[in-house]
Amino acid sequence: MLVAPSVAVLLLWMIVPLVMTLWFSLQYYNLLNPTGEGFAGLDNYRYLVTDPDFWVSLANTLILLASVLIITTVFGTLLAVLYDQPFPGRNVARLLVIAPFFVMPTVSALVWKNLMMHPIYGVLGFLARAMGLEPIDWFAEYPMASVIVILSWEWLPFALLILLTAVQSLDHEQREAARMDGAGPVAQFFYITLPHLGRAISVVVMIETIFLLTVFAEIFVTTSGGPGNATTNLAFLIYARALIQFDVGGASAGGVVAILLANIVAFFLVRTIARRLEV
Image (cartoon, rainbow, N blue to C red; front, side):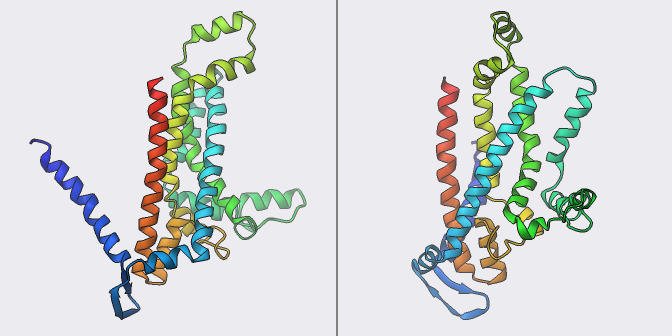
């Protein structure tokens, strides 16, 4: 009874927006045509799944998700092993490498867009000219790769923080015994360190997946989903339908699909992690 009010508030907080989204997804509701309202049935969903932009945005969402997960997991693991070794200035280096995670997504996108990747004023453009090369307009020529770099830069510190904590919990006597038995650094990494990091890697993948499915600020600030729809993910497609085309019904249908996709992914991730925790 003591927690009932809190549970009721949380249920209302979740259920009311969900019910409204479901309701609008079944309606013809465009803010530019207020006279065309009415019950649409599944027309909004039918239009969504037959729209080529939907499948492109879904593919872009999965490409972003898979690419960032691979980069952050691989480099996070390698950096965690590196930063676990004693070297001068290790504490300062740890602080610097974790710092990008605390920068707001919009600020990160602006830094990379104007300070790093700008073909005229950016650091990468300056280095290219210094080597006698033509500067690259990253967001025009390689838009998806540019967004992946920004997201990886943001999420690599998070993966490193989790994985470094896991590496530090590894029994040093176990590694010392393996070294005395003749196991080299590579063998110790693959047969001792990497199996020990299995649970931590699963946690990193689950948490990053939940957030990467809804990436919006970085795309909005840098490419606005373009050129064309090259970087339009599901979240940006829903935004475009709702606030650019003013199609509330179509955007709500996209939101319902996004909710279903996120819950399906979360279901399998939670089951996978639960199995690892039982081992």
